[in-house]
Amino acid sequence: MPQRVSKDNFHSEVLSADTLVLADFYSDSCIPCKRLSPVLFELEKEYEGKLKIAKINVNFDSELASEYEVQAAPTLVFFKNGEEKERLRGAVKKSEIIEVTEKLIKE
Image (tube, rainbow, N blue to C red; front, side, top):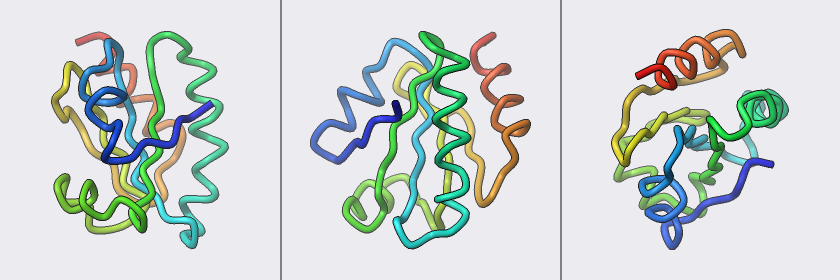
């Protein structure tokens, strides 16, 4: 299940993770974010052990959103070995997320 992450555990859960991490910067009031949530849940199951989903609420963790220059929700930021590798913005399709995930897993 995607894990809620805050500035307090962002480093340990995202930057220090030993797997690919998809950080979902979302808002509770965002309709596209709500539609994306079950897709991310499916992806975490499909890529078990290869992909970790971290959910960051931009309303509560605005410092993290600002630090990573997140301008709108949803914004999906892929991290590997503590570095940002790719970013998707808006209501993206599952196929787009899979394409980026597959590419980054192979790197």
